[in-house]
View 1 (cartoon, rainbow, N blue to C red):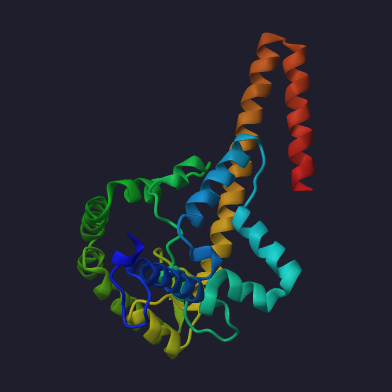
View 2: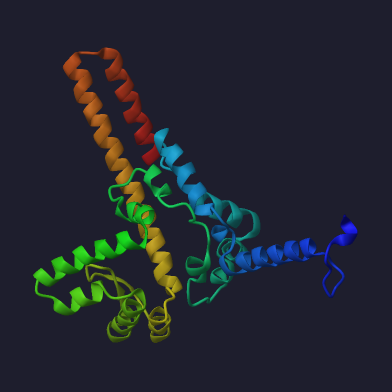
Length: 257
């Protein structure tokens, strides 16, 4: 049977060529997006972090992975290993966010305890859901008298990127959806945004803010749950339940402190 395999110019069978092609594809993926962009990486992180939250721990497997690599190989090499060429010193844009394949399973963010699940639900619904959501947002903007903003809201992504890049070039800053300043930007970063790439400094600030917001919402939700359990235990005059709640309060204080 082996003698009947078709062979290429280099004398390798088709299966060998296919394996080599897959190997090169994975190598290019690692080069462009790093370990954080390998298939299903973000999905696995959501599941691990969600399981940790269910056990009462506010963990971030992504932050843990970055810290571990930094401790082993150093900060600069760790950033390259985690983000690919985006992690190189002086890299202007976040290529890993555009080319990575870490988030392949829609809706895994629903396992996390967070106040806003709109993005995760939109992942499940797909592009049609995003279009409907932006349609409602555009309608509210239009009712507020901002015709240009409403038109931009329902425009294709490429048009919105160009508009965002123009705003960055005009103001010298990146602003969030509410118009608040996020970080100062350069003309080069504005040009990168206009063609669809997120400037690296912006991506780093957004990632840090996202983690801080997630941590804050977790502790707020946990505190609210503890207060509800405390009130219920006092109402039922259950001393054992009161002791359990007190222990939860001490554990939360230790985790914060």
